[in-house]
Image: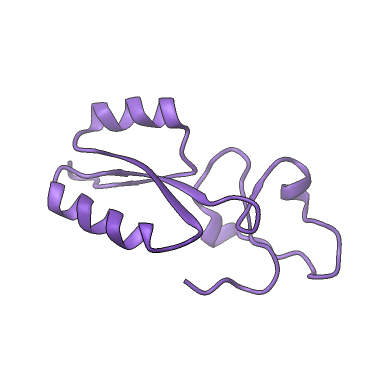
Length: 102
């Protein structure tokens, strides 16, 4: 994964719409508003992800791909919605990758 120039900020509320709403601050300028308000930056922290899918083989494959990225941390996996909800409340991930047909 190639990082864009300048830090990319993600919502402080843990939303995972960072790719759509990512903002770049000027490389030599002040940090963006999101960073001042407690948002995460790729340079400071890894993106914390929870995987939820009822197919174990898919979960394992996705985990392997994501763990190869230095700026991503996989917090855990869930095979059903109940476990996904419990893990999300416990781990507070930045993003949940979930199978909607689970």
